[in-house]
Amino acid sequence: MRRETVAKRTIPLRWVFAGSVMVLITALTLGTARIIIEREKGVLEEETLRRLLAQGRNLSATSATALLDEFPEFVLHPAIKDLLEENRELSYAVVVDRNGRIRGDRDLRRVDLPFEDRPDFRPLTAGLGRGAGERFRADDRILEVTVPVRYRDGSELGAVHLGLEREHLAAVLREAQRSTLAVLLGTLSVGLVFALFLASRVVRPIQQLTRGTEEIGRGNLDYKIVVKSRNEVGVLARTFNEMTGRLREAQRDLVEKERLGRELEIAHEIEEKLLPRPNLGIPGYDVAGFHQSARTVGGDYWDLIPIDDERVGITVADVAGKGIPGLVVMAMTSALLRTHARRHDSPAAMLAELNRMLRPNLRRGMFITMFYGVLHIPTGRFVFASAGHNPLLHFRRRGGLGDPLGTEGIPLGLFGDDRFDERIRDDAFTLDPDDGFVQYTDGVNEATNPRKEEFGTERLLASLAGVEERTAQETVDRLVGAVRAFTGDEPPSDDITVLCIRRAAAVPAAVDA
Image (cartoon, rainbow, N blue to C red):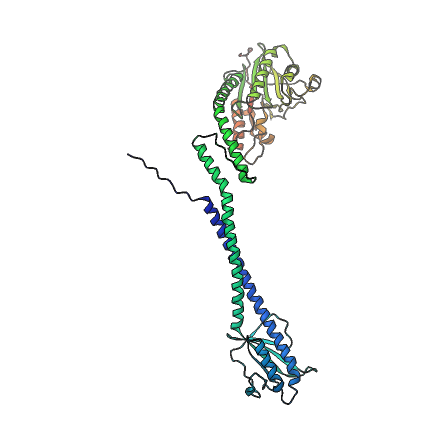
């Protein structure tokens, strides 16, 4: 069957960008035009009313003297005629006396007739500074202002009525709107042309990036994008060129990573061999240990070291470092401890010897916290020392969990012999039948949950409540389970090691090596 490939039609980014800018500019322009036109309408209406009021006041001032004459129409008629000829927008101008009879009009035949208001006039509340008796009224066709005519002593002689055709105001407003729209449309046209130009300038480098991506997709890792822009697109182009170079390096590194992966697997196997065998124990004692690395391999370590038929060395250590470097230091520490443990009856002396041997071989900033003790199996006498490690948790069959037993020792590898030897010392207690202790690394108490809260010492001690009633394995499982329930899906940030040893009721006389 013949296979047909249908190419999806791609919308050019240039037109998408230009269209978006055009829509934005058009919307802004039309919105601005509407605001300006509405404001112009208000300004023109206010200015027209202001002008109409001024004309009414001027005619009122002229009429004040004329209304005192016997024939005021001879003065008012020419004044009104000139006013109407100069202001074609005025529909009428009428001066009436205090009795409401016309004394001034462009048509002399109306003189001495009663002035009749338009029946559909309604008052306007124009926000202008009007004087006493001045008012605005309007209907659908006429805007009228009425201004009282007063003599110098304030007595009212009559009133002036000026009428303005609304159509004139509408015509002025339409003209102003046409002018405004013409300016805004010109601005819009310039903006649209600029949008097309800007889209072309912005999209061109992106098109080059698209072509570069297609070349990479074809396997051409030597393709280079030439973009001279100094903005983010230029940065993106340079990043793209760097990316192609890194892809070439990645191809070369792939085999190397596979080799490193194999080495990590080997390192993990070595780590498992360094830890005690699952069946290793102490005769007459219940022993359980747990170890989990934060990475493929880690720097935590615990061990049981046979010294002679009646004594066994017990250690829990934490190398400040994870991965292969931590594993290497852990392996070196384990080897040195197993080699020299039989030479020292004092755990403090053993740790001091380890510090002298390890410190010259540790890189700057790397150190080891270590707990080491020697258990006399028949009597349960346990002598121990701590080089900056976590306090020991000692529990008794009668009395339960006691206070944590801490020491003042400092970690291995940080300081010279004198300062280390000054702080390290031995402590001791005796394990009676069913007594025991728990030791751990800081991956337990410093474990964090998704809210970045630490498990802490209080939760650790709470999880060990009733430890005297449990086997060593139950104690370890309960503590590890509490840590996992607390951390949830949060990946471990540090290696976790837990060791629990409990004396049984009867103790044989030999160590299972």
